Image 1 (spheres, rainbow over the protein chains, first blue to last red):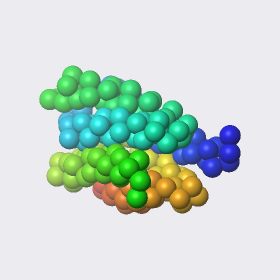
Image 2 (image 1 turned 135 degrees about the vertical axis):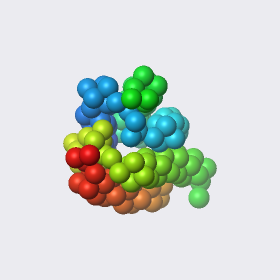
Image 3 (image 1 turned 45 degrees about the vertical axis):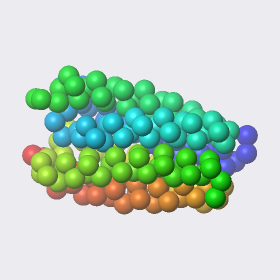
Length: 86
Length: 86
């Protein structure tokens, strides 16, 4: 592993880990009124695209973190449908 | 420009564009209660790290889109401080 990859892993870790308190907050407040549905939808599409980009170019940090963001995006989508009206 | 870069540009476009309705929604509702401050903070740090990663490896899509996400992150941070209490 080259040092750029280490840096990429850290960058992805920080950005992905950041979504954990966000998703957790939606479930804690049982409210997802402020979260934009276009944002969640595009976030899911974007994660899937970056994942493919990472696979095509063989970039491990992009593959790993976008796989996780895809799962977090699904959790946000579920929260939006469950709590979006409150 | 190789086709992987085109794909990367599209991926970044979708993910970055997704944050526009999210930021807009916070300003429209004048409410940022559901948005997690650790999320915004880590999002900003992550954008800056990805930007550096892109610069180091010379990856144009990562450079371009993370520069924009950095600006959107700043707009979210401002909304949080302005509307976070409501």
